[in-house]
Length: 321
Image 1 (cartoon, rainbow, N blue to C red):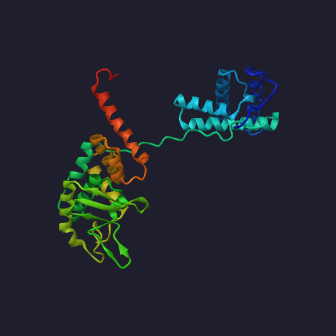
Image 2: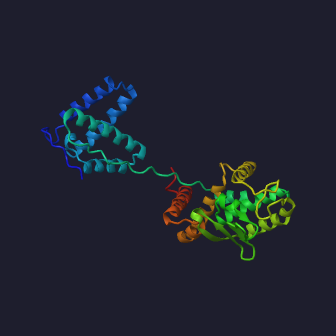
């Protein structure tokens, strides 16, 4: 652990600190010629450091790494975002580096101190009504419409990644140098996929998705060309691409006036969120999504809480503003 720096300034007397901060800002202004905006930002960050030190009767020249970490925790507890904390630490680090160069400070107490990790945005999921409306809309009986409905139903029914969807074959194939990465077992109503890290898994397929798949299979043969294996084909008879699935589902959502930028992964998020809301079984959702760690699945508990919070805010008399 970094030890404190001993200087003759008495602990708790901030007069020398204030003078050194003023000198540092003058240096930034005259030598580095920073903008007024940047100088003001540095000044605010260093004033924050001074307040935190004064609250514990500490002198800036005597701070150690443990105390800087404590200050960082205090900022985090005040719900300051990670970006702002990182900026403050950068300002403090520069100030102590200058003290080492100009005033003989023996070490920089901010070195090695990092801001809290930036929180990742929660995955976006459709509401249950919009998800069902999106996947159940039949459209016409043309091959593209039937393929779309089967793909969208399967994405939502089984929480597949788009890469897993497009890799599906009509049945399991192993010949020469080719082996199926995924296929649908129509008898068992299951889909076999190979996920990230070549990890295989089996996921149930719901009744509506199986019906949509059978409707598509009935017409799929009319599009077959050279490769007989792919489950989902383009109008030209080639295996469908992830980009084409993305374009089709976005256009389909827009045609239904669904107010969201819908993409295939949103149906995977919707699958996980809706299953968790209904069952509360995090382990089962982890298995069906193919997550190697439960931590990756736990983000959906936050989505579930958001849903509950919205219900509470809308329904509870004392929640209304």
